[in-house]
Amino acid sequence: MSTEHAAQETDRDGAQVSTGTTDQGEGAAIPELVIISGMSGAGRSTAAKCLEDLGWFVVDNIPPELIPPMVELGARSQGNVAKIAVVVDVRGRRFFANLKESLATLDAQNVKRRIVFLESSDDALVRRFESVRRPHPLQGDGRIVDGIAAERDLLRELRGDADLVIDTSSLNVHELRAKLDAQFAGEEVPELRATVMSFGFKYGLPVDADMVIDCRFIPNPHWVPELRPFTGLNDEVSQYVFSQPGSKEFLDGYAELLRIVAEGYRREGKRYVTIAVGCTGGKHRSVAMSEKLARRLVTEGVETVVVHRDMGRE
Image (cartoon, rainbow, N blue to C red):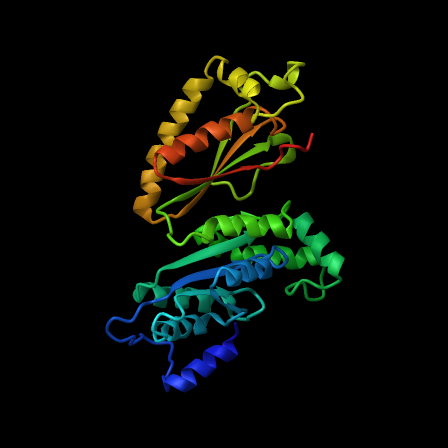
């Protein structure tokens, strides 16, 4: 779908589109809006294609000041355009000031909006730009890393305001699509969605984690010869982990803490949370703890996805 199609809709309806307060008419349904942004090379195009496949009306690289008119146009479509996704990035100049103004306009119009921010490590972004032999849009006469640093600084505030941050450093296209499908494929938008991610500290912290849990105080099944080949998904490994002193108490205490946090997130309108559970290698303890913790969240009415980031790397 394209902005050309949107312009044709305007011509047929004879509507005069402006950036001011919308007059959508009584009973007009305001479309749901997702703003896709993030680092160049982190997968914005893949995210846009995924949402388009899920039935969203997607517009790439739209100037921020045109977002409110696009929503107005959707409201005039008699329900034919119920979900709009726009990709906004640094290719458009005067980026951040205009985006903040547009978001304020949308909030004043009570538009239900979410921001998806795609993140990636500097090393991963450099590799991607070098593989396609293209310059970073902000590097100018400098290096790729200079452009990446400038973009991070420009997007810092937007990243902090994002509803969902996805780190694509170690994700391929299919894994990124799976993450987005898990968040947007359902017909009903739940109050709160959680991703519980096991990981290994020796492979680095997940940069998209909202909360980090450290399970390294639990004795490591790696040093039990008969358990070493298995993972935390194995019953024997899970039983070993939760038979250790403090393990069950830790699970109970953290589950209660997350219940309190989830209630606060709901009150604040936060829809997504990523909980990272770490051990040394991300194979035994963190996997077992993640599985148990995810089940507790489900019993509290939180739709939960479990991801084992580093399982299988050893």
